[in-house]
Length: 199
Ligand SMILES: NC(=O)c1ccc[n+]([C@@H]2O[C@H](COP(=O)([O-])OP(=O)(O)OC[C@H]3O[C@@H](n4cnc5c(N)ncnc54)[C@H](OP(=O)(O)O)[C@@H]3O)[C@@H](O)[C@H]2O)c1
Image 1 (cartoon, rainbow, N blue to C red):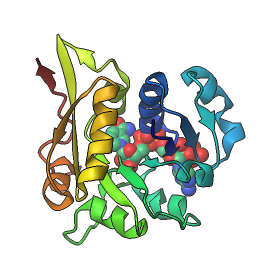
Image 2 (cartoon, rainbow, N blue to C red; image 1 turned 90 degrees about the vertical axis):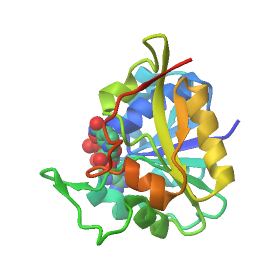
Image 3 (tube, rainbow, N blue to C red; image 1 turned 135 degrees about the vertical axis):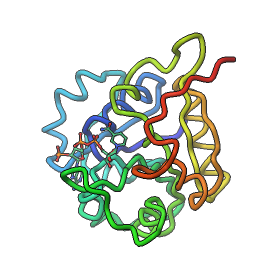
Image 4 (tube, rainbow, N blue to C red; image 1 turned 30 degrees about the horizontal axis):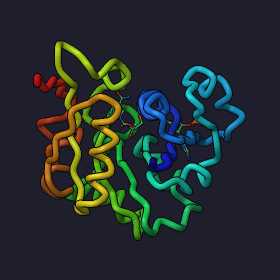
């Protein structure tokens, strides 16, 4: 089973952490203030999740990025070994005050990819509100849909496996410049869409 490191232990990081820890993934969660500040969080989540530094989280096979857009560079600074890593980008390019960041026409995940050279970035887990992501994905007789996109088939398969294993229905949107744009908030038509796939 792949190991998972989470950078950003706020609403989205904790929602994701609870699902993957429950599914049995060895998981490390981190924030800006160090593992001691996450004692309560790991107690609440349980299932063997551990708190660590961002460097420890980044040593996992799959790194889940869930910090606010204005903190991304700071959170990734000091982590240099991105080779063979998969980065799940759950961020949205929103600045404090809910101001959209100026991306100069780029897809936000391509900007993230430029900050993690050597890693394969898969955009996912950014379209649901945190409370919806945290809730039971088995709903209304089906499974809540999570979209994902990325440029590397193997990395996407690894993320698809996690999405399905934790009970969501994974839908592949293609590459970052296509799917990422559909998922992107603000502007993407799939942002905040809470959809259920009925079997
Ligand atoms: N909230 C939603 O409904 C939602 C939905 C979809 C996507 N998103 C996106 O998901 C991301 C996270 O949102 P959120 O609502 O979870 O934010 P949040 O509750 O404010 O949590 C942000 C987390 O990032 C951590 N952080 C900040 N600077 C860091 C650093 N330098 N190194 C490591 N960790 C750092 C914070 O740690 P400290 O507490 O130690 O500072 C905190 O744990 C954002 O990009 C947001 O746009 C949010």
